[in-house]
Length: 279
Image (tube, rainbow, N blue to C red; front, side, top):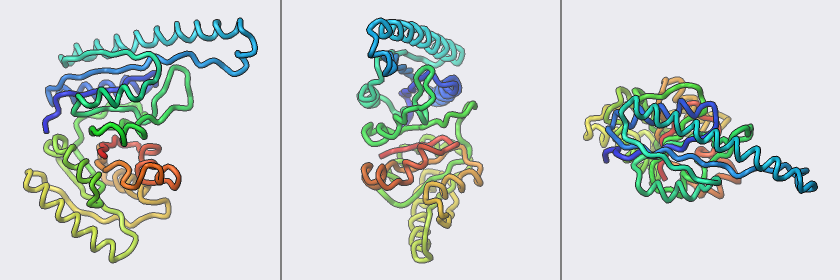
């Protein structure tokens, strides 16, 4: 499936400019249209403000003015960069952090690009919106870590493979990237020798499938570390010098992963490499 419609979520973090440029460069490579979306946050009134009616408007007006000024700056940067790269674009601003709006808009996109953590102006504790969207969107996500760098077309890709429905969906959705990459590694994480033998069979089946698409891949098995599957995959990808990790999102139920922890949750929290997720 060609990538012809890209949606990128823009926020107030310092990493936003780099994420936007990454999204625009990918859109240019695939000759795609791009839509930028920015949430204009409602005022966050400190608890002590409720005790004094005169304090509330002061905080609200100040935050609204700052949020609008910030939104205009983010918009102007987005449109300027899109013009420089000659990428057709549109811009949407939404009042409030309406995550379901992204779910609705994603139905009309081939790829959605998100920050690892969403940031409002001045907030230190970011909200992980990719966690919710990875389950409910039904479209492939690229989650960009909050690093001050531009990620271009990936040259080295790691596929975290376990033969699950979610992993198969992710590989299929990622084919436009895999077709243009230089090196692909199919990696699985095993805890026992028997499990390793089983996974290597699965991995070789995927290698053969990708070869039919003209994609050459190598197969590796990673020994599970004490820190878990997510940490093992991430460490392996770092050692491989990967530019992108392709994986299924929430193979267990999302509730189980939230309670017990899991690979998706770990990767969304800790990755330093862009993630390509499908569910």
